[in-house]
Image (cartoon, rainbow, N blue to C red; front, side, top):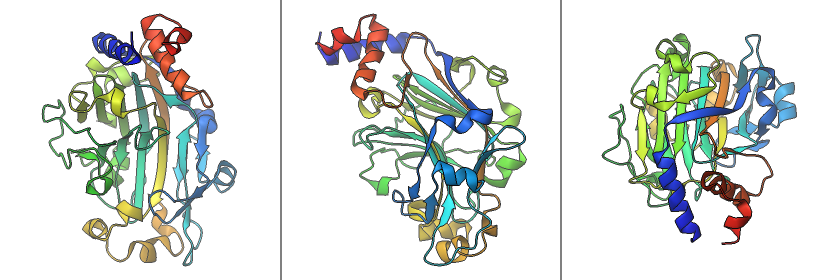
Length: 352
C-alpha cells in the first residue's frame, strides 16, 4: 500500500471514531511556563511595536508570572516610559511540543488584553508556515467588543457554506495567506463578552478547539455557561456534549490532513502592527495615532493589557500519538501516528 493509501485509511478510521478525548498535557499552576518557549526578539512577524522578552527578562520584569490565585499572567510592560523610536516590552510564548491532527485543546482564561493599540491572540501554528497551517482560537484588537476565529493556510482551503456553527458573522471564506492581506477565513464570535472589559467583568470563559480529521471546530463558553463536562479537572472530553461550535471548518472544503501539520500553541500580545495598527481598523474604536499616542509614554495605557490563564489542557484520542515532543524528528513522528492507528511499526511504514 502507498503512503497516500495509508493516510486515506487513517482518515477513514479516524472519521469513524467517536469524539472522545483523553488528557495528554496540562499547563497550569506554578509549572505553567515550564514547557513554553519565549520568543526573545523584536516583533519581526507582524511589524508591530513590541520587544518580546526571553524567559529570563520576562520573569525578572514580572511580565510573566504565576499570581496568588495560581493563574499564569502574561502582560505588556505598563510601568516603563518609552521614547521614540523605542518599542515596548511584551510577551510571546509557544509550546515546546507539537500536537497532531486528532487533538483538542482547552484554554480557561480569566482576563484577556484589551485597549487601544493592543492585539492579543491565542492560536496555533505549524513549524512550517503557511504550508502547515494556522488556527486562531482567539484574536481581537483595540477596543472592539467581539473576538474573531480564523484559519490561515496555503491556497485551496475555504470555509464551507454547509458548516455547522452558531456564528453567522462570516467575514472571509478563503483561508489562503496569499489573498485579502492574509486575513484568513475569519469568523466573528458574536457574543460581546468574548473580548475586552466585558470578558473580564463576566469572569472570562473557556475556549475549546478541536483539531480533527473531519474538520476544525472552536467553541466559546462564558464563565456562567461552561458545560458540566468541562468543569473541574476533566480527564476526558466528549465533544458531542458541547453543542454547536461557534466556528466550524469541515474537511469537505478544507482537507485537514492536507493543509495542516502538527501545531504549537501560542499566546502573544502585539502592539499596533499589521492589524491593530491598520489606520482604518484603528479608527473604528480608537482616536489618535497608534504608536505615537499609545505605545510611547508612561505605559498607563496598558494596565489592562494582560492575559490571566487558569489552565491550558490538551487532549488526544485513545490509542493515538498526540504529542510530538520538542526535538523529535517531525517526519518520523508523523508516521508514528499512522503506525499507532494501523497497529504496525514505524519501520514498516517508513520502508514503503
